[in-house]
Length: 379
Ligand SMILES: NC(=O)c1ccc[n+]([C@@H]2O[C@H](COP(=O)([O-])OP(=O)(O)OC[C@H]3O[C@@H](n4cnc5c(N)ncnc54)[C@H](O)[C@@H]3O)[C@@H](O)[C@H]2O)c1
Image 1 (tube, rainbow, N blue to C red):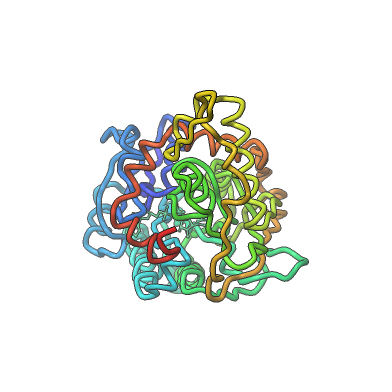
Image 2 (image 1 turned 120 degrees about the vertical axis):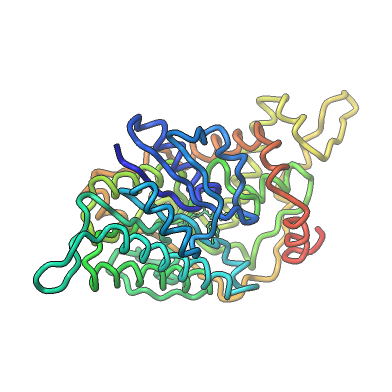
């Protein structure tokens, strides 16, 4: 039986990851370590925590004594580090928090793993590691910086982060590689493009647009909306991480992306059109609208759900123009391919949000509302 320490699993991708593992494997145990920041919601994984196969511990990845205690108690085989401050806009507001969690927190986990997993030293002084252990760092394509109109990020693209968020993720990656080179620690890193899917906190583009449409609010788009991101359905990311941990070569970086580039404006327009189409074909979804306009025939009007909701707002500082991943390595070495096309994934995602408005209410607390008003004005 393998025991995983999965950090940050009350957040978007981590939650999807543990649900994926628990469904796929019978003989595993997962310990979730999560500080439950504004982005973490225990409700998301409440049904998964059974104190047997899945155990929840509330705590900070930067807490040394807690990390040591958990390693001693559970004898982890794998660490999968999702925990992070993950929102670029927030990193522009408060960079230091990103250094604390994303860099120091990761380094603290690396050290706890080292203290627990080293079994001795070879004749040249390098540590010997317990068989089968792996420290996996969940990283991002943002560490590579920004592309022009052409080309893709490969694993050999020089690291060139621009935002405080991506600088902190890059530093964490460099520490992971430093532990590989200095201590021969068995590590791996995946650098993935933008994810979308269920349980995505509604400060990020797609769930924010869905939430605003349902509330009849305007849809803020940075700059002229021409920034390009490469979108991947979250379950395909989870499959990639599982593959890399179990079959990927230790010490390696794998890029993960589905060749699905879209401008922010395209994403917003597509989300508007999909919600409109779903509400046309399934009128019961119209009941989810918080802005209810009744037509003379007594129907709930949806004619106002159109591109006129889009409002262009002042561009993000240092906004990277284009990200695009070359996933050839993970495809050739591990046979990974994205299984959910964007056309299917976006409908699945929007339907999930239409059916889980209780979840959205739960995670959007008063604190989040204050933050939203500060970022986008009270539109
Ligand atoms: N969302 C994306 O599109 C994307 C793409 C590529 C990589 N990533 C990376 O994947 C990881 C997860 O991203 P996400 O979108 O799920 O993030 P998220 O913000 O939804 O979740 C982060 C989780 O980490 C927890 N956390 C934050 N600080 C912590 C701390 N100090 N100690 C313990 N827990 C803490 C939060 O409570 C939350 O549950 C991040 O490392 C991010 O950099 C995200």
